[in-house]
Length: 359
Image 1: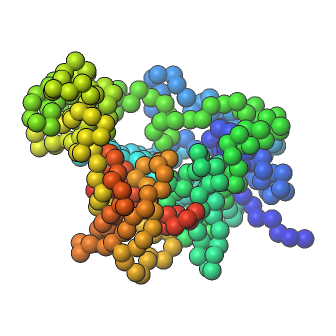
Image 2: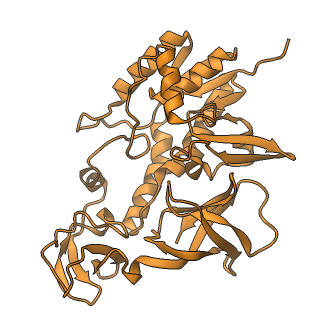
Image 3: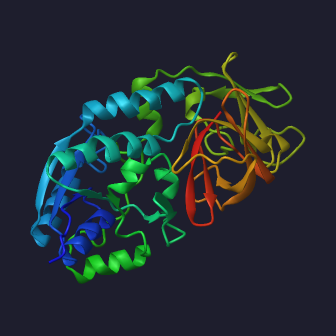
């Protein structure tokens, strides 16, 4: 009789992780599930509270007849993810906490918990795939191009990938919902969660302002003309159009205004008119904290593709190492609103090579 490995499923109470548990149970694996609570404070808006998600997770486990554990990693989340999140915003950058959350919480702290509970593998509802190729674990894109989440998993290492499963990675979202409905899972119509990793759907400006007191300042045109006031540089990102409150301002042009720069020294937000304004575009970026999932490439410049934000089409580029150890990425075509603090992620076909943080 073939040994079936014990599997721990990270169950959020959503459709994807629930179908992950369903597929593994139907395949005959010994399955347990765990619901992670990684944020202690209550959601004052009443949106997406952890108690509702836990109840959904419990209902799924009751239906599938698997054990559900409730675990609290709030301390680890604060120390490993949220302090970084605040530091990045304080420095005027726009971080992506989901990437660090996967690396430090789901596939590190939670993976360790799963192993201590006797699980040999950790399974999540991510739309990604992995495979062992010539002794190296590869991270592959999910087959549904609209849901592929390899971008958020690019910081995982060989050990983490070797102990991870992504059972819905070969499915389309519509297929996942259909499987949940067919199995009678009570969450088959539940909407996808959005918002800060583990913190949920919150009014972002009010939430951030609780931890980083805002410092309003001048809002200037690219020509140096003061057009109004901003609420605090941390609330804006490059390429942003909404929320500037300068719609009536014209600079000899009817085109809308977009954020093109943040001047941290003067606490000034710089805007320019036109979606195609040259200051919104660049063909070169610098990245640090670059992580390669497999062996680091030996031949540079590396010809590959990359994306600088989730759901962007892969863009042809060359990657080279600079003298200070950072990486320089040069794109074939101009890229719009490349944002410091976000991640640039590298691909070779369906294989995710790794990535780094845009400086």
